Image (cartoon, rainbow, N blue to C red; front, side):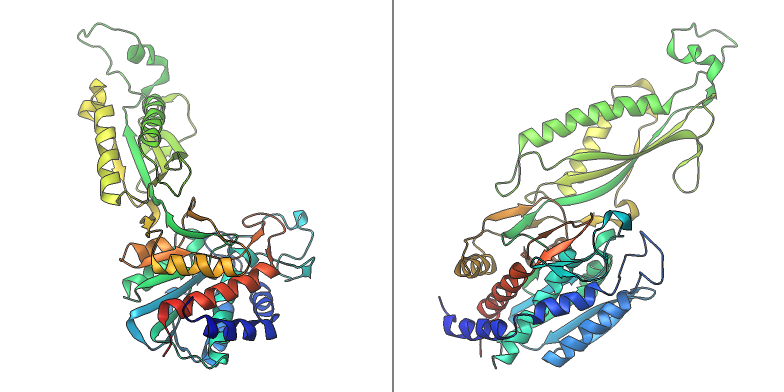
Length: 437
């Protein structure tokens, strides 16, 4: 392969300081950086301290760095080494982690960075501080080998991925883009150039309140005579019919189309949250949810909706809106009072990632990984990550990272051998993509 001699020099540099990447991972794992949206504790919300360590290392390597706050006290860190825009590349990783959960279920200190059996344990070790450290170590080895890259290389250490990717979204909004992006989420050594899009949506169904004692007036035929009490309309019961119809809609969509890199049926619709009651509050939820003697007039359904990499958000939304419209046409009440749809609930929206399987960055990762001993699979990512936000701005993205287990669970760890191997593969692909002066 082209650049093989250069790559071997870099890999030798990595081997000479094999422990460097694990030591950096260990250092930042020992700094708790739990996303404060999930668990507010100043002792555990130390994203600023993680960024300080990474800024130190990036500056030492030769990056020009800058930080800015996405949310108060929660900075993004960006490093850049100047070069050609035609061959520019972003290395991206998030530094926020999910809460520990029940510490009693851990057999190690969740923030101890303990190493045993060639595994480095701790919250965030695999998701994804190990991947961040591998990116930094890869560039460090390139610089130590005396190699000057042709293309501009950037490092984005972002916050808030676990709550929707608002750190990466903010970087994209500020125009911090490139020709391609490599996100070092855990992939167990496989190469992932595709992931489906994700929408969070809220469907609000309106009925009409009444006293439950007059429920018969709603559900059994009554003469429309003078003096008849206005019948109620139970929004929760309408919602149950809607959910049943939604299930069929989901089945139809998952059977009709799929993506070659993803499991058939991954484009699901999860009914995640439902609120039912009387009166619509300013927060978009029912006001009264504790009195079953009221026929409820409000049902609110929150949905997690995945769509294929080959679809667009606009297409997906249009199709779902048509489904809701046709559902409403089956009911006399809903024809006059159709459900409403709120898109981007909580500001969350992930565009799809659909990089070609023969894209040069994909090809490089596959070939370089094969050189380390195993040819990787090319597949899609069934979840979502920050690659989506760059893809939405036209940046070709690929996901590639180390192996481990326990992410979002107990005894999270990253495999140290895979961490070193990931560092080598990323370094080689940086050289392949950016080129050498």
